[in-house]
Length: 306
Ligand code: RUB
Picture 1: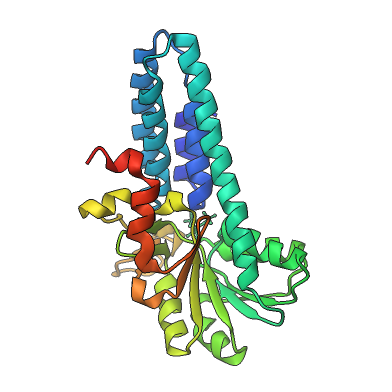
Picture 2: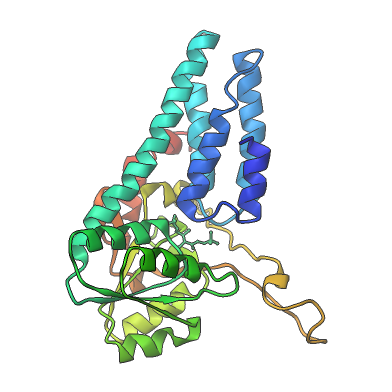
């Protein structure tokens, strides 16, 4: 798929979820390695990268993937043209494979955190969290999941469908039922995915996540986020915090249905680090306050340009 088509699919959410959009962007750029000259290819990659980055503003996995591909291309630019294409293509493929492995590793580590008879609440649709649940199920753990419908686009339905397929007992509730369900069903843990982790450990995820974290803290329930390191924001070290995406208000209400009001449709919110008990990453479990160190370790290639 071309970068333009990929960007369009990310914009209209045919491709969605922080990890998937990062992988899709890298795949699209990998297809653009042939050209008249290495300089022309790099210039084209930069142009495509800009279009891809602009497709959705919040998940930092997207600019991270684009910047990493550009870094790889720059690293290889002194090779002769054929070798440049082959090596860069291989390097990008390794990046994609690493992302898929990161998800599996998180699923493996996260499954260890699930105890038989647990009731776990999740929000939105995270491939990483679904993989973690599937893994725990395969290991024979018997647990229940409560998932929120996640208005306005109902990504919770995707979660419910995937969990039903994996034969995990699942209950779907409206978003505003989260706290009551936590209390009534004695939820043991909340596990969510994430779009961006800032250097201070704050987590940006689907709108409503922070309210769930507040309820979890109030009820003394562990709040856990499963996040690959590609979702950590190197630029937040420099004070560049993520931008919250506001989507089309048509997703909330038919235009003109109620006259004389303003409608807003923020798609993400920020859960402060102090509300988060742990982050499950492919490097292991870390406290959110460990985000800075993980960034330094994983993003050396990028941070060196600061
Ligand atoms: C999806 C969302 C997910 C994260 C993590 O939002 O908030 O929790 O992206 O997902 P949207 P994953 O539907 O607006 O993209 O674990 O699959 O990367």
